Length: 79
Image (cartoon, rainbow, N blue to C red; front, side):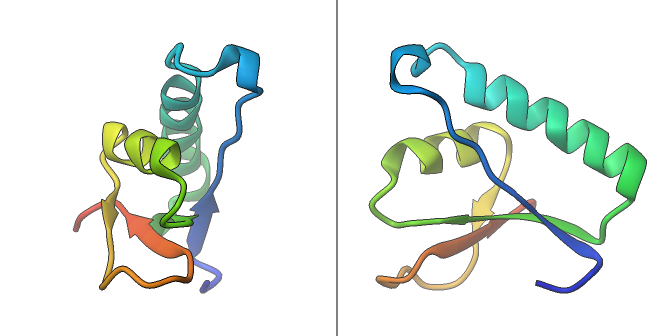
C-alpha cells in the first residue's frame, strides 16, 4: 500500500458481534482518518472467507476491487 493510502481493519470479540459495533467504529475511524490524514484512499484487505467483514465493508460504503481470488481481496471507497 502506498504512503498516501491507509488500510482499515476491525475485529470484534465474539460475544459483542452482530450489534453494529464494527460498523459504528469503522465509520468513526473513517471520519477521523479523512479529517486528520487526508488520504488519497482508504482500503481494507478482507479474506474471501470472512463474510462478516465483507458485510461491514459494504455497510460503510466500501466496494471490492478486482476479481475474487483465494488471497485476501482489497476493498475501497468508490471514486
